[in-house]
Amino acid sequence: MSDDSTPLQRFIRQAVALMPQKRDYYDRMLQEKLGTKGKPIYDIDRGKSKNPSLAQLNAISEVLEQPRDLLERAVAGEDVEPQSQWSGGVSEKKEDLDLRSVELHAYALGRASETETVNIQKLDLSLSMGPGTLIDEWVEAEPVSFDLAFIRGITRSPPDRLKLVTGIGDSMYPTLNWGDVILIDTTDRQLARQDGVYWIDLFGASGIKRLRTVGQGRVLVISDNRDVPDQEVDAADLRIQGRAIWLARGI
Image (tube, rainbow, N blue to C red; front, side, top):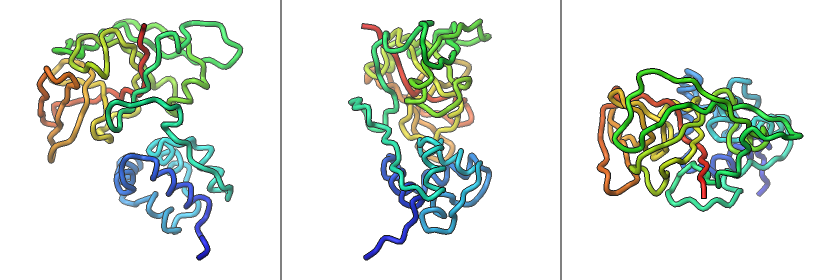
């Protein structure tokens, strides 16, 4: 039996297969991002949508974590394979953990480079991964230089929407250690990933925690350290500042 699907259909199906959730989950994310009731991924999959809009391509690229140029090539009729998010061979201790641990020397701090670099703001702020640290005001940040290709290997989000923070406390041990430098994607302010690790404000305190929806309007704030109790809260009391996507650790 012949395959009459288009390169775009095949690309979308393969990209969804690489993700931890089913297709409908990502269509719901797209509905929130695009402000529509349509199902862009489902429409592409069944052949109804053959030429998605630029806004749809941008949103699909972000939701499925695929470079937009691959999507554009598939739309143009080129057979391309989606990029595997786990091709780097990082061994994850928890399912759907989207942190890539590397040694501290793996990112370049203000080094000279022949390649294009970008500056990411490192906040002069200690995010508590223990009891919580009150934030009265933001203090001055300092820029840290990264190779753009390195950043693009982690995320497609604009570099100016990324922040570096340093965690303290042990409530997220062993996932996060005291002094880890954590890269936060501030474009991701919705709880779109069950058990994702987020930078949050809760009752006026800031911290990095794992989040899980447990009912209508209810969120479980999880500490990976088994000695620290989890906390179920009203979603209205929780403000997500961004999602943790990478960390650097000293040796």
